[in-house]
Length: 96
Ligand SMILES: NC(=O)c1ccc[n+]([C@@H]2O[C@H](COP(=O)([O-])OP(=O)(O)OC[C@H]3O[C@@H](n4cnc5c(N)ncnc54)[C@H](O)[C@@H]3O)[C@@H](O)[C@H]2O)c1
Image 1 (cartoon, rainbow, N blue to C red):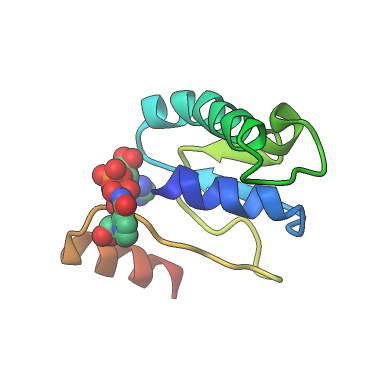
Image 2 (image 1 turned 45 degrees about the vertical axis):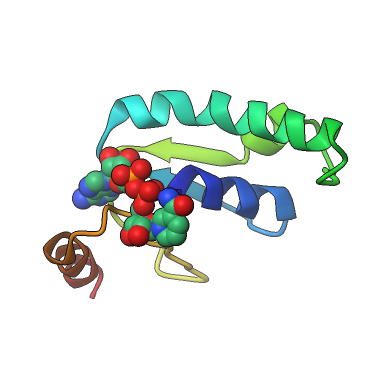
């Protein structure tokens, strides 16, 4: 879900910086290739119009295992951790 959200943000070309954060390095290792493959397929099917190649669009996303805000200005955080209320509360507390 999180990589899909990052992919959608990158596709718009309207964000200066997109950071996909996950505690699991393996998830991040797979994310860039998964996003590039998905964009390639969507482009072939004419389901999306990209302003750059799928690789270039995917490269707008930075990956990090550090789960923290990267800026305090013009910041949009989209939370997509598992549906565990204590985990979500912990994350929101860490942001406030
Ligand atoms: N999958 C969907 O189609 C879908 C649709 C609507 C809403 N959602 C919601 O999105 C959220 C995530 O669902 P999902 O299916 O992507 O789950 P998922 O388990 O596939 O992915 C959750 C990710 O969160 C990571 N994670 C765990 N703890 C973390 C932490 N402390 N900080 C950062 N990352 C952490 C995990 O490593 C995992 O990669 C849930 O709240 C779910 O209800 C999912």
